[in-house]
Length: 83
Image 1: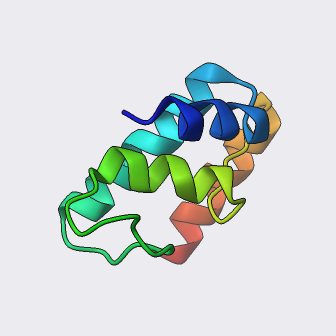
Image 2 (image 1 turned 30 degrees about the vertical axis):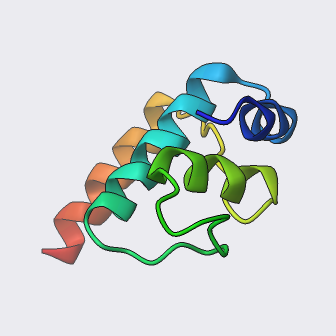
């Protein structure tokens, strides 16, 4: 793991659990064959470093959305209507 990318990514997403989740999801996508949004430093660069670099360059972000019980009821109603 490139610690420079990690530190730069942590500057963009300061919430460590959120950063872990964003990077983990992106690594899974890269492992499944999705193309990187950045040019890798070298042909055999690890997907973890690619994901961290994407976050560090601001191409990949995450957010925490707080829900209330009313919002959850509205979402459930929407799902029922969309069936």
